[in-house]
Amino acid sequence: MSRLPAVVLVAMILVACAQSLSIRGENGALVPLMGSTLVLHQDITIPPNRTRAYFQKGRQVPSGTGEFEPFCQIEVKKLLDTPQTVMADTFTVTKVSWNAETVVDAGLLRLAGVGIGGGIMDSSPISNVFRMWLHSDRQPDVLFLICGGAFDDPIRVRDPTLADIRGTFGDIATFNTP
Image 1 (spheres, one colour):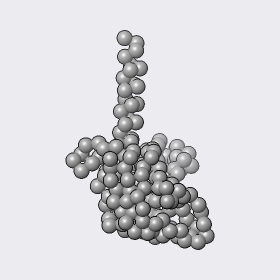
Image 2 (image 1 turned 180 degrees about the vertical axis):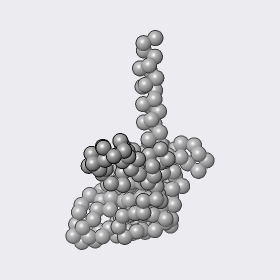
Image 3 (image 1 turned 90 degrees about the horizontal axis):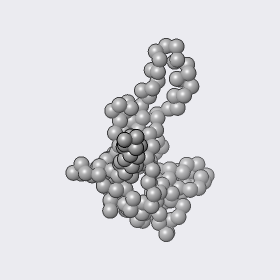
């Protein structure tokens, strides 16, 4: 009987891990991200002194993204003082991780707010984010596809869906699951 709680805990952890490596498809079912492909239909430019290109609402945006819409980023290895081009290509997702990111690091603000409301900063907006390692034989310096859902209060935040990711790219790229 004492093993039952441990078994339940392990099962919950495994379910959480499986969910973090999967995404909601069009019909609501979970589909795996590992083995997915990002088909970039056109070359994209990463500005000087940056390692990421940002996408939202079907277009590339200059820098950063709006907090209240799903977003994606393509990240490269090198930080250069000249523009970098990621050529149209097919990239395969070889590894996936999941994380919750905050709008700002509220650590110091929590300390400042200890005496005025007991944890008021605990509801800082967050975004659930998938980091997908990309592989292309032609472009080994392209490292990641990072996609997140809209920032929201922790109790209401949700993972990005397959439709969200596809919508961030519009005609620029197609994201296909296995």
